[in-house]
Length: 304
Image 1 (cartoon, rainbow, N blue to C red):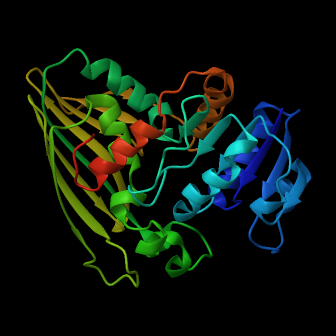
Image 2 (cartoon, one colour):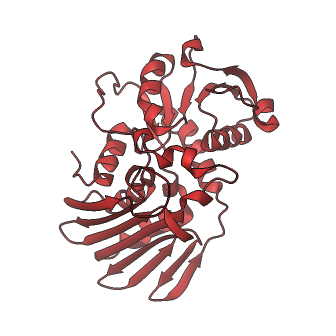
């Protein structure tokens, strides 16, 4: 198996390590936009290094697009003829008005959705299918300057609206797991803006209200919470549920009933395994159309 990675930032390196751990006979090529030193672990895994998509001259079993969000569309378009299978990091694109006519159903374009692969979200799906849900309240809060050690937060794409930054799109994983669990809402309202002292030009807080035919959903996203929080509270006609995604606990009516001891990397390993063993054979649980509908909801719009 021969694959190519476009982008070797933190998430690209994680996927390279995981892929090599799962399939040690894989031949990995990479495309970087910098000549800065590549750490020895990644260098020892990679067979070929390129510095532009124009250097690509061969077909790959799969291409992983892990560069900044605003580059995803142009990268996919430029490399589309070189593979039948594409793994695109979420968010899929930085905006909705790109021409998608060239992306046909004969090729597999999978968009990352790692929270679906956590034990807690899988358990939530099983539990909540059996209850009449009337209300969901979810939050994802963390402090942007703490995201990457020894990296100035002002230089990363999250800080810049033009590069796909801002909590509405950058923290799209919340909407991904919410639509995975409950489907797409009929109506969505979103208030967002840049309210903190962070030196960024993207929105740092967003609050959503979404309406389904039989339930309401609230979602809060921010870049400013000093204490990381990732929670989902669910009220049904039968019970109150709390799913603490960061700590791996499930509470039923204030009593802990499940505790998962997952490592942060476990979900990424499961996702890479699913991509290689399922998506490349034609099964795709998060194709480009679904991911764009999630993106529409994250921007306060209804799905098409």
